[in-house]
Length: 412
Image 1 (cartoon, rainbow, N blue to C red):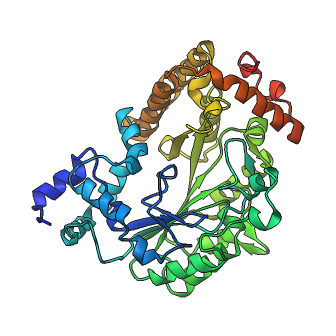
Image 2: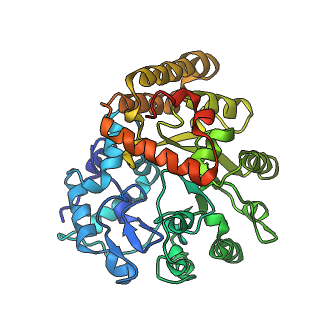
Image 3: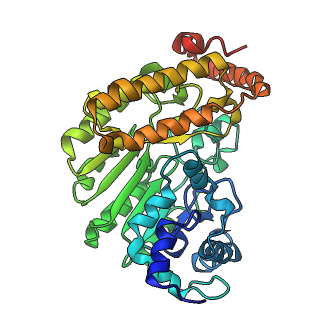
């Protein structure tokens, strides 16, 4: 392909509305074997599956080659719709962040062939999921990402836990194959801290002297030990550990949304991480649904005031499926109340107590959430919501109307 000038490369990184550098340095291996361009492309045809073909073949699959060519031409790809949607709503997307963070790797595009092939599989950033093993049954999840959900759905015991390569231990082999080039690992699940292979990974990286590799986690933070081994003590060996804790609310609301969790345990674990591991950055990764959005400002304010994190350490995942839990399916009165609460949080807390630099990321995300919430309600989803809430109450013994009194007008 025609080589771009340095100026053109800079423009591609900073001005293109579609280009992303990840297809030249990253893949995401899902717990069921699917290989994706990144963790945000879960709802589309995968690049391949490690159960069917080697990773190095998937690296230059037809889908991957086509993706590279589209991005080089500044054409939008369906794989990247998550980021485009964030940008369309005024937010800063992972695509933009990765282009900035990995800008030094832009010369990799020079070696892209006319058909989109990029021979050198020298991964800088690898996303891994050991399996779908999980101790929670979050209301919006599925058997794909939670073995508890698989159990709930009545899958045979031998099918409840799935592994990327069809067996344990293979993810660690993939890490070993790329150990010389890796700079960052994204580790998710299921719940990765439940896995023997996760413990083996940390011990391997320490043994090989690769504690300079940055570890990014998505974790429910319900466990900080594997057997008798303290994961915190192992994290202390690493230069950078970032915990994106999947926590959506507090107290009984969190325990309802994330079935199996206990708020008292999560509080204790957050405090332990903060006290014992100064090298670990604790962040919140909040999945926003109609269940938590009205009380979201209170949860964020309480978390900040307890000294757990700052406004810039809060990130949103605005749920789209299952649709009956999506924020836009609140009724108009509840939408107006949620918007009022969120705007009050911005004006009377963030803008009063924090600088623009400290709060702008969260403010943009909140405004994006408000924009999403303003979409029309799909009233056909309310019976589905009511049915699902009933199932949760029957299985958990938790009382929806007592835990979420603000939503009683929605459930019919």
